[in-house]
Length: 163
Image (tube, rainbow, N blue to C red; front, side, top):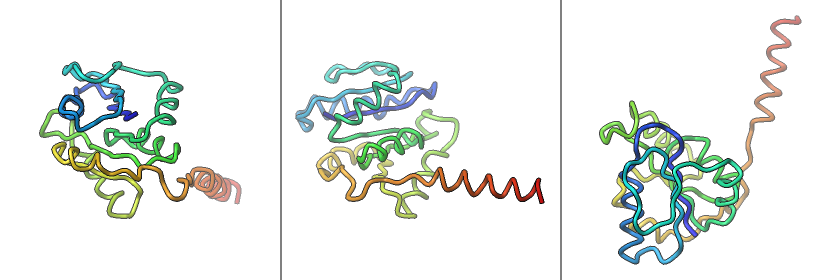
């Protein structure tokens, strides 16, 4: 199963939803596809979808998915990594009225440049080829540095306020 999530941003992400729906219709995607479409105004005709999902449902779908495609919001693609899947990330872009600016695009480009394990797709037309990318499971599990960061920050704050 392929799981696609566009998050909860209030602008439509029709470009991604329509592309996936058409790829499914053309038979390029043989697997089932589940789309979380958010505020998108394009209604899929060939894929199962819901506008919004609970966190537990998203987690379940990510577990079951062989491929995860997300928007460029960090919580979505980091969650895919936590499920030991390499996400295909399609950043929302201002020129398509998908977001107020191009911060998702710039952020994802920078992460990719630094070797972060995401597959960034700026042009939705490239999804036709990229969906042939079959090694979606990470070789090594993604490890968050949140605990170390929080511990270091706490030590720094204690040092500053309790000399």
